Image (cartoon, rainbow, N blue to C red; front, side, top):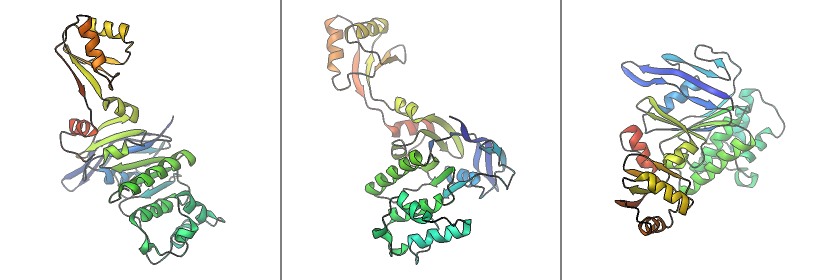
Length: 307
């Protein structure tokens, strides 16, 4: 995969306050990149810099290899839904999109209907319905539809699921996955809910107090977040050799002089303790450890988090 967006030591200062400090991110083409952090962490500031709504105080940012740090003219298509969607409440969804198309100089037959269908709207559902009567989830979907006008390469979504109920969040998740797969869109989406983002993102960036403190693939996040069987003992070489030979265990890791982690047989840990006892191999303790995304977030940020 190729890098579609990259920043280097990006900083933003407001008077005496640093909103961003030396942020360097890498977004690959086709990513669903999750930017996770508490409210006020700097997520919106970063997105506004990417969208050229504000300028960075220092650092550089490249999109498609073009340095946009100082340029105002560049051939890059970015769709955005930052903060709240700008909707005309007294118009229908179709009329809202028609106005956006006129502003963008787009006059393609059935273009508006295609976008509305893409984000899951049916004509019978919204044909004459004013936006003021839409639910929060419908307004967010319409906001995404507006962001899709012009066929962007990158879609920026800032806290789009705020206030949604579980059903709305599930529908939104399915929509994002659909846009990524069918439109081959690179999507950058921010949230303070790590547990939700981890369900569909391909990469995660953790931002805290204006600093990007961790960047990883979702596979790496899942590995960190695995449950495991914890064995405390001293003769790890003998324990490992025995478990591999007798139980064909492949996924285990020695993490310290006294701790061994086994990532198999979580549904029946007794089989491991029984095998070791029967073979006369001594250990001090065996237990199941349940990892959580909350613990991970607290570890990397040193504070509480909504997950």
